[in-house]
Image (cartoon, rainbow, N blue to C red; front, top):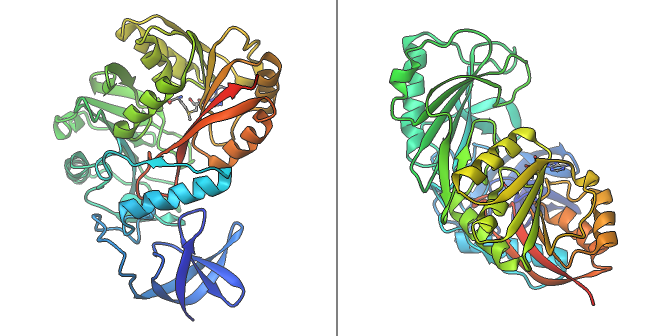
Length: 417
Ligand SMILES: C[S@@+](CC[C@H](N)C(=O)[O-])C[C@H]1O[C@@H](n2cnc3c(N)ncnc32)[C@H](O)[C@@H]1O
């Protein structure tokens, strides 16, 4: 069936109509003409399984990555960046029924400070889109940048020299499972974390990765396919650092950090522009990304975060930056009172705010809320309730994830008088 791509679905796939059916086609652009031979259900949508692009839309650009179209990492390298931003602006504006701009990422390649590369019997790389059992073998990842090339080359040499077995995804056996690369984009520091099953990693590994500032060996002795484990040993420094504006943050193999450092600078600046008053609660604080930036600007900051390890790092970040702030372990639903704060910052996971937290916000009525969201849908649901007592002063989108359909947004809410 020969059809034309008319629009994009929520997951960034092109949509073509076959009769009354809407079929989503990955890696396509509006204006492409595609021959769809087979399609099937994927969750709640119909996705083309066997298709060929017969005519390319004239609006396409050349993807920088050689594996684009197969690798599941990026969906949109063929769509001009300005167009990517426009699509995100339209989607966010429509969803929240407001006119919303999306701030482009300062860099659209080499911006990611973390990649989790699978080491499998089929190759070293990322999964094929929608196929957990297939790996696209890569030499370099363009969204991470140059250091991925050397790291993957050295890994291949190391595995060959010591006859180390990659992981067999189907059988669930082997030794080397992942190589996780993390780079402080503003400090130039690199962390290499080799995730293995149980076994022995030859000490000579150090010689192969002598260009890294920190080298970890993490053991994942379970069958589950995750890219973290017990960080057993390290060579070099225990942490690497990243710098956002004038604040230094520690990065550890098991800690989260905003993945686009260049845009994270704009994110922390945006949050600090939106906070008001003096006393700030940084809820869902992680390693203190917002709180420490604000503490450096003389705000009185308290942070709450569920993950004890992240809290440990947040408090180390406090010391390192010589600021005053307190981070403690806690859950959103258990926060006792929100009365003591002028601004409450919330940056929840994709599921959005816990209903008990929303109740407490409506009960205690903090004057200002800054809501940082990585999921526009749950943001919308939460805002619909908060709107009973809060008005939306500003909404801004930030593109943290070029070449993907994901949107980060920041909303400033103030208590209605
Ligand atoms: C989107 S991340 C934001 C982290 C941080 N604000 C940053 O910018 O790095 C969400 C954070 O919420 C934490 N979290 C998840 N569930 C939570 C809960 N029920 N209560 C408190 N924090 C939670 C996660 O551990 C994670 O650090």
